[in-house]
Image (cartoon, rainbow, N blue to C red; front, top):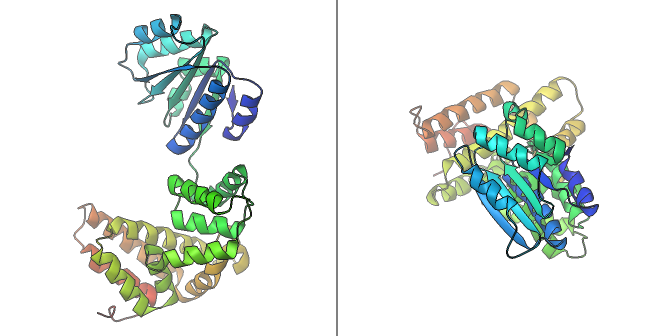
Length: 340
């Protein structure tokens, strides 16, 4: 039986199933579900845990024999099967199907994997787990879903979700779920009663970003040549990996392009900003940037970033830092170089 990740805790509260499969591309979310299952199992008296990292070449006969034999140390056992490649081979398929059909009462089997393609999800072993156990699939959190995901996670931790706070976290963590969860956990520590001082938090985020890549991009969009020069020089001297600047710029320009297209279709600016989760403090900045830079101009910047990225990977011959500097000059709307 397939259930959504958000249904897992409710199901666990009603009792453990005998076998689980948790999989998906977002490792952090897969681990979160696995931990919830294991915590519930421990609370239900499962005192021993065994883990096998398996693939198509593993000794499945040994694994089945160990699962079938009585435990010497505890009445109930957790057996984790980590599918390292998602490919279990013919023997693995037979073994998992056998487990799903005839699992001992004192054993809980938890199978986990990364992303499984459609062929793997149509395999015999997958169907056996679907029929006899519980399957939880974690999808990648897309950038447009991130704010909603942050709000839900804040609610889970007892934090009173604030949309501006969620937007700020999404902007500063760029879809890195580990960094996102760490920021939310910091909030829980800072505001144990759940009530966040959003003004204090947003000011703190603003201060942190002043001399970061985010501060660099915002200064460029604002047209602040002096600040761009200062931050760009600082980041260059600190040998900040260019890929961090490139990826952040790419995301920003791509977002501006999408908003520019929507404005051309006569959508209201407030509606467009809300749709793209622009947090309150950045709305004047983004509004001004959309007025200053045409769709065609933004597309040219995006193409340039593509060439810079290829050069970084040795597939083109541009000077990466010089070209990045040129991109910021364009964003500033300046014809001359940055101040030295």
